Length: 404
Ligand code: PLP
Image (cartoon, rainbow, N blue to C red):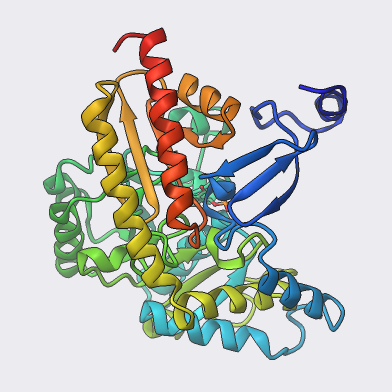
């Protein structure tokens, strides 16, 4: 790393709370699927800020929309109306089938809102003892106290106990345990259609069927945590649609603002009817800048062919990764859907991520052995090929270093 980069890292390490284990690279600009570091080096970005830079970097249309909004009106608070929340909410309703949205600023806030709205629903029904949640082993829903309570990892949970309870975690490979765990005290089941942080592990159809059965038997609600899988990432508008599920609540974030922080909790009409003014709120939630960015993204997804592109590019990526797995014994499994893919390795994924970065390619490690790919949704097919070609070389290097 250059002196410039070292100086930035040194200042950060002194004054920024050390909650992140960052990689040794300082980015200063981007364009499309490329990022450039402080020394001018180019990287192909197959991480897109963990699925946030959904339109790549510095998208000209998004840049123009944001600039226009910034020079018109940024924020008025939720004390007043502005025209954009309704437009974004209408599009989200069309995509999800859930008619109402609450706007917030992140995925974890969207999950918090869903948990609160689920409890509020039962409270309004006069069933105030129905407060429990059922979540999934290996699931991740964020790190605020409520979202952390339905996140499985002890590593994240233990130092902050006691958390919100009771929460029962069930084994996603054992659908019967879900049905047994859900009772007439369960407010809601929360489950990601593909566990993202948990290693890009898709829900099985049997587990999805168990959610349907548990909801039918007990009347409990289903919260689809779509923060990572939602809004086109899997080649479907929402990941739950692959399984024929009908959630009562959906959390969204990441891709929605294409880099501008915005999240939303989407709710069914029967839940919406139980929510009153003051039940929940956010000073920034759904401000004009966030909504303008979200609207631009949703227009690309719904009207400009982005969803079809994800399907095509996602199929191409899958084909290339499956071929890669045939020639690299270090790859144990290829998983995922659309442009959300994971390569489970026989070894810790760290050397792959490091060698790839040194070769100008950004990929991400999750759940220790998994190389996760979350490229921009508008990535070009040629760039997918370039990325997989580089991975091919990197895997060969790693295999030579650490025989599988
Ligand atoms: N839910 C899921 C499924 C996620 O993947 C994440 C983040 O990775 C979150 C919730 C939390 O979102 P955020 O980091 O925007 O608060």
